[in-house]
Length: 317
Ligand code: F6P
Ligand code: MN
Image 1: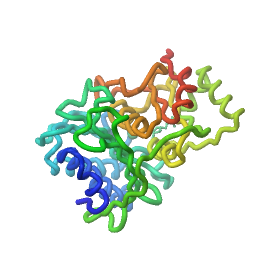
Image 2: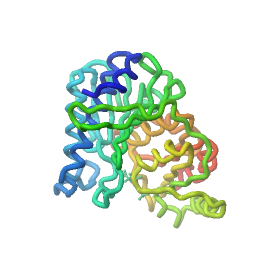
Image 3: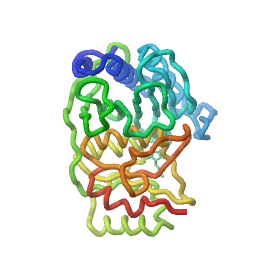
């Protein structure tokens, strides 16, 4: 059980929501152990989306499922590795997660992440991102970092603006008996000229995206792009600003999943005072996943930078 800093921080929450977030923290501490092991090679299977699976993907997913089952406060669970709705027998919340994002850069020793969205009740599909009670992500790099967007008190439901964002760092030992130290409270996103150009291949044919890239180069933006969604977003929270832009085109289609990636990360970013959009016309949190495999474009980060990216987020064929 995660202890110390984290448990104390969550004591003002509705008890079942606190249990879910503590279960997520425990799972993250265990995934940190999984990643130290040798499971970085392909297992020869693919998930339902056709992505090649690593032993670590499968192990990380099993860890999350088990922790959420044990906590007794999860009704429905769904993960990017196993995109179906699994009843967990608990009462209170439902959780969608991506247990290990960045499998393709793991072999290079780059930072990877996990993502979690928590909704009240039993439904995950058809719920817009705004309805999340809380969201979280973890970065597995030189340190293991857990970022929570959570209500100050109670069960949430007031959207991201009524949440606060906290950053915790995993101490030793990892896994069972792990401790989390609060590193930053009230994490905020301001304005910074930092650019993470995802799906850059789209710029070959997508004129608005090409113009945005050219403008940011001309204005000498700092480039920060690792190809790991979570570390790329966490960089924006760590530095206090910047923009992650992932437009899509028929010839460079969307990879990011609405339920497991876009909605939880948009919730964290907006809770920190940042902005999000999937269509250039408003917050990505208006979006609901109609199916487990729904995907979308997304821009996340500093409000003025996201505004600037809106032109290249409008749907195109
Ligand atoms: O989940 C897919 C992913 O690996 C993300 O981690 C990352 O943001 C994205 O793909 C990178 O895609 P691209 O190479 O097209 O920018
Ligand atoms: Mn992913």
